Image (cartoon, rainbow over all chains, first blue to last red; front, side, top):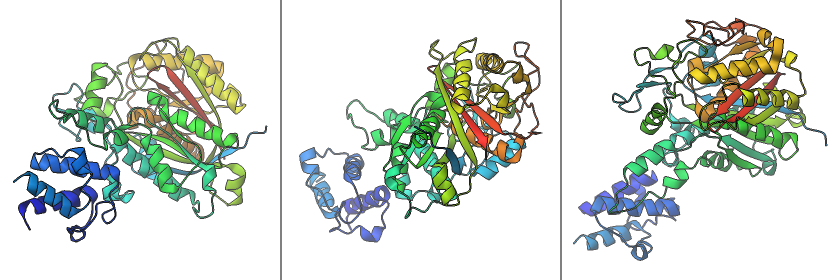
Length: 78
Length: 413
């Protein structure tokens, strides 16, 4: 697992109170991990803080799974 | 229209003297002080360095960890007390009419800790707040979350009248049942202001005691050397139920609520009217609402915060409202032990009234050393030790900044 992936998953485990084993790349924040709309916004803000980047709203809306978040952050921090 | 009778069928609390009603009452009648140096944050540079904190509170007994994270401490205390009260009531959630069950909660400030933390982290160059900032902070969220937990779809709102908040909530909940708008109400109040903003804010107002060398004797209502209140925190909750339905299901009944009064000082932002007109009026309306005479009252749990002005004004108001009978009433300020729970005060003091009636014991006003020449020493403040006395009618006063006054009247069942 990449460094980014490990950090992203740790944030999700912490913020959503889910078990690490549930946080697969395919897992959807809302459908699989029990996040509501506020949780999702909070996750995006935590990613921005952790990786020191800005994720504009139009891009944030496209991030709905763990894998999509990791891919976006890896791309943005290259 | 004939009013319905309203009885109390469940109780719960988290407060500086205990995290259950029984622990609270044991300490209350034994004159235990809940004050101690502040542990919640480093208070060493604050003018006041002590408070009455809740001890050994574990929110996960009541709310899952991942949910609790989204609740300000004032809401966590609310969920704890409400859950205790619901469990205590023995209500069967599968049998009640959820459309006729509601929640009216009181909170004087709301999510002060959340407000403080979030604004502290705010940076001009990246102007963002957490999406949970608003829902965690707002003073009505506790009542909303309680209704979600129990699927209560009846009347639901929150009263915000500073230190009278819980009492106003309880009067409104009482009225909902009395008027036939609801069969069951969860009511009470909660507060969690033992934090940097709460302590420094009240310090600047010169409202709280600075007796840092002896926290346990700092809350000394009606004593000559009182120097302000001691901040407390926590919650108190009640299940109010329409009497006929409570009787039908064979509920355990703690007491009956028979009246409530409300008034305003219309005098000053924070100082009480020195003659206690508003305080006198609220007691008068409460007795009238309950359909009783001053002579019927056995016990008054006073607002008695241990502030120089407030205690004098309230003692004058009691003498005006009750006349000669004032000298025969047992009076006590349980804030001498719990500290001042602000928006939760009326709920926790309501619990004290109910226990006083059930056990025939008046909890004391501790920390009395010297009489204040400005307060009539013929009044019986139950100084220092609890007293045995049958109590048929108990009254609870609370007065809030803004000049909001509320008085509750309970009857032994």
